[in-house]
Image 1 (cartoon, rainbow, N blue to C red):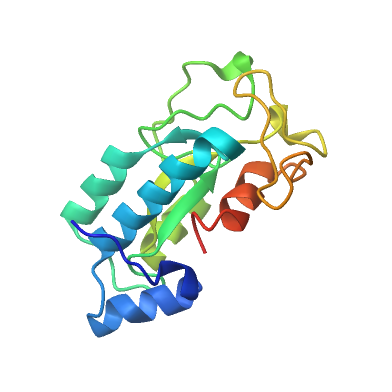
Image 2 (image 1 turned 90 degrees about the vertical axis):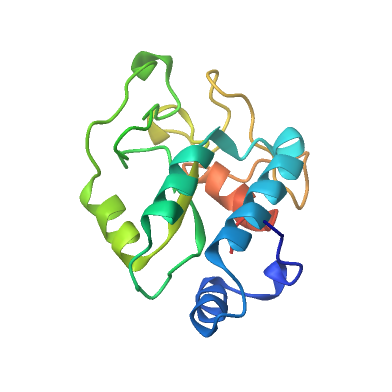
Length: 166
């Protein structure tokens, strides 16, 4: 697998268009996004857990021809169950909980063709305006690591700002 050097130049629709034209493979987009996440994670802590194997399995099974076919996607770890994945919501109270189903949003995202490869950090139960849960640690703002990217979507915001996902 190779990485897509022009990844940062496209938004999600642009990446999907590149896939549709055959200019890039979904596997290469996934590898690029996973490499970016691995590089950014130590500094910004955007992801609470990677789901690389699930993402690769989704690619191997074939993606639907939705408008976002092949676009790497990070799922917020808050009220968005994904079958076979932990749902922690930033809390130790849900430690070990693994969802047995996809919620409606996840089902729609999958039908749109996105490739879910991880879950992003959130404040405990999404209740705070900053993302510093005890269970996963502080999420930093890639534009200014002395600041928070906010909450409840702090991990998601950090992932977009760090160019992990469009």
